[in-house]
Image (cartoon, rainbow over all chains, first blue to last red; front, side):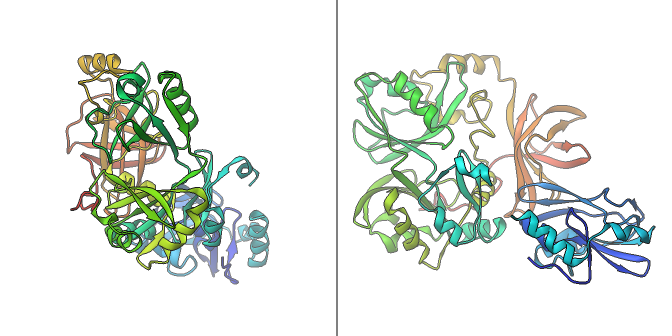
Length: 129
Length: 365
């Protein structure tokens, strides 16, 4: 399972990549691996306001439907509509082609609640013990 | 992890671990759910041949002369006219017509039978049979020593032909003895995927060898219970404990064609009563208008009324849509729109008929 170096992480296995006042978000490689084949994603809707740690999307795999929480609060600017027909991109490329949405960050201070890649690596190592 | 300690393990558990399978509890057993991925495995079975570890299922040997044993009274299958070397699917019912188990009966000779049952129900089934069979009837639970591998897929006949002469000549729902690895074993042309295939019954100690032999064929890949579930659901096959159980009858489940009404069997009078009065619920099959998957216990809404619940649902890898089945308390014609819902999730679907997947190779030749 890979953990990308330049991203921030939640304990629910979402990632955020901050670029100025915007953040791209998705789910981690650990998450896609646990879920198995992803078959459908109910993506965040552009224009919607999302709140940190609250529901923003649903991911369905063959076995289950799982809630996805926003890593940061803000307004959804765009969603990765490629995932509508090709949700398997999340399995193949969780940090790149499998991104979910771009958010306009409401409060940059919230990033202090997220883990860096070293902390997240330790966190998932603890989970798999 | 400690939950897994109490689980039974098949002779292949180490093989599964070597293959990096995801293992999980099923019916009291630690079973492989997936190897490379459910969708990839599913598609492999539809196009090539897949190998399933089904050692968890139960098998009984019964020596029963039909007129004396009461065996015929315990299943819905017409045992009397089964040719030697044939198999039949049917049910063992309780007095209320509820399904104690769904099973396969193999007629080996005039008075020699093999019964194949679900894993979680094996002990209960055995107790039920022992209780109701005539005392002189011999019944043995051989589940602990007999394993089973399923080989399924359009290329299964070619694979079978390369391991044993004549296997590919078996017709649908027949079986015979074949010598494999020095052992004389039963192989039947049956399965749970909708594809041409076989179930191979082999003593547990030889199961790993048979597994390796079959997997050495490049046409064959190991398939987990995850894909077994999506494959069977695409065919509209019921899963015991989920779609049918002791509180559902074959009439409600739409499986009355596996009942022989010309004979007596436990549960018949309740079924006849239900037939006359009309069942209060009925299994329907539905296909979603998106990739979204209906799931177990989602409500079924028809014309704004809550009419029932989903028993099985999944994304269908072959169709690319969500599919499922469930019981409803009213008549809904084919083609009608329904909604499957749970909390914020709401899926539009259309009532259809089974099988969802219509190109299966099971009955070819």
